[in-house]
Length: 315
Image (cartoon, rainbow, N blue to C red):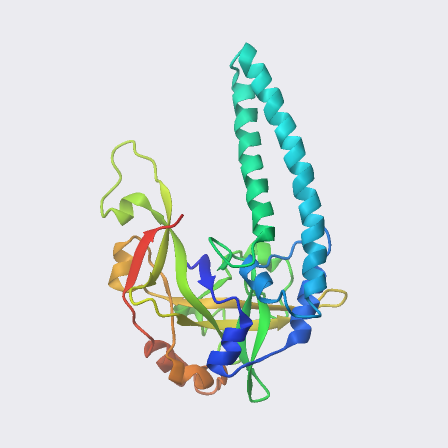
């Protein structure tokens, strides 16, 4: 399953390259909720950077960053105090508890400093462009005959389903091709989208990547691999989306990437699924699905781009 992808977070590139329009009000609403303290909305930093110059959104970014900076400074102070105390105890006696406290404090200090540096960045780097389940991303869809870009959460909650499905079915950030006319039949053929990405990430077992069986007594070791087209082209990844509503709850736009059996090089690297990049000439047909002609939609998925995916160990 594609648990993470490196997306194009700058909505302006969607508009410039694919003729879409932005629905700015929905982005403003999302940033408004995200800006509040203790929010549980997750936006990739690269997407935040893309909106720094939008007059309605820039103050919301400043509001979010201010309270997060304060929280990070408080945590940094507390962890430095914890580290000093742990190291003081270690000078007397190296106990398991003191060593563990030293390790945890050092890790949390590093994390806090990294998050504070992230808040200061103006150009994306590292994981700033990666999305994970329940992160938001720009998604292109068709609305009233126009290509538009809206913010959506990466984990699809179908309209009409209870909110607890997010936890009950945590894998619904991907939609298997062989389940499109099964579990996904209320969405497939009705609401389609695409995201732009240049890489995707998968959890794999080291022994599978190395093409061998586990040695006697050897434990399974997980690795994260980055897969990207050898020629560096960006992918138009086929997605499904839904607009969920419920009384007293904010509306939720959410999406899932469609996955299929992998090409040989992905399978050989140890993974059994792969995203589906559609061809640019199929964008409008994909975004304007006809539920009475699912064969045409399957044909688009079959007539996909077929790059050779190189892989490397993710940082």
